[in-house]
View 1 (tube, rainbow over the protein chains, first blue to last red):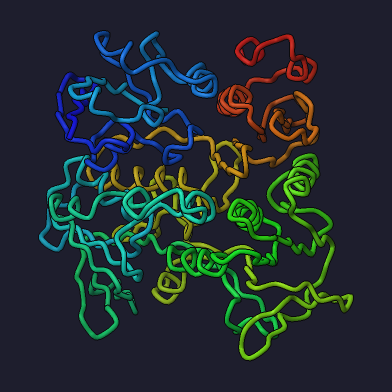
View 2: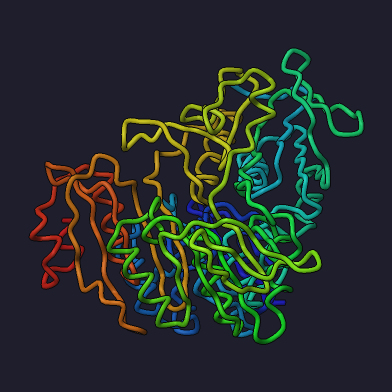
Length: 106
Length: 416
């Protein structure tokens, strides 16, 4: 099972095994990782699962869709490496992925 | 205030609000006992997919679950499933379970939700007459639509009805929506949206009976065979879904002498008048800070917001900032996102073209006060309008309707 490393805004790392096929958001929610709210349950409707993808991983993770981009446009504290974690599917290629959660999702 | 006493926290209702609140209590460092009591036989799950991905067979039980079952044991949260609470004894600080057992509490959190409204309709007890609130309800509906050539009649053109009709079409079934008002979504959306959804659904093969009274569900050998309209016509169907709203499960609170008014009355920290009793989620009636009134919100964001308010209050954390209420619905390739409530709105502004063009619909309806403040936005496949609308509602800034309408300006520019 791939390991995703969730890092909170204070730098605490939480390496978590996430089943392939789940999203990075689902992996966080199922393991009660703080910092990801996911109010809409993964419908790309709320932008409360915002994460920063570690620079070494941005290419592997890929680009956001147009829908995701327009949601991100209005989220707080967006950076070029911002993604909505409900739109990142976990694959074996993403074993070791590092994502940092913002201080607040609202 | 901190709670460290040995009795701990009892949460009544293992839905989205109750499950999330238990998880937030642990996230926020509460170390005492937490017991989550639920009537349903399964741990907390997400209800929104029941009329959508779950019904269409695109989601499995694991993805529906709020947390994996192992989470509760790992987090020392005691799950008491298939368990009904009979009574709250506020003086003794204990709840009585069906069967005689009592659970003492230091803090009680009521997260009892709502149940589908039942209407006194002849034939409503026939086999094949369904409601949609729980996973078990959804499984019955899915089974009723499983074989080819089925027809689903939906009584009630609200979100549940329209989402179920869309899912029925995706499963290859026929769908007829029967609504007593002259338009669908009459209570929950503006007329532009109703017109749009009716036209879109019709193109997808759903038929509508609008402004139609219902006299009875007709049956044969104990099974529903159709819906008899007030004008005498029979709408034949293999299954009848009744989706006419929901009522708060506030009886426990009422019987315990807590103030209820179509929902358990709470403040912005989820507190009732009893400092040991909180209520969260669909079952509450709560202040709506952006609208200077109280009301009830039936939504996951509200359940999570109130779960955080209560978990914060109990663990002595600063309360979360107030959120603009918001809602969403998925039907076919349409993503509807609504922010705010149209209270005190006197004008509507349409941005984009509300034509029901299959595969290319995209527009938003803004609801403004007389002094041009955005109170609500309804957005179809229009995320920027939704997100900017949410910010405008929160900021109370006035915005010229001509700018909202102007598609040559981005929503970032409009909201700036």
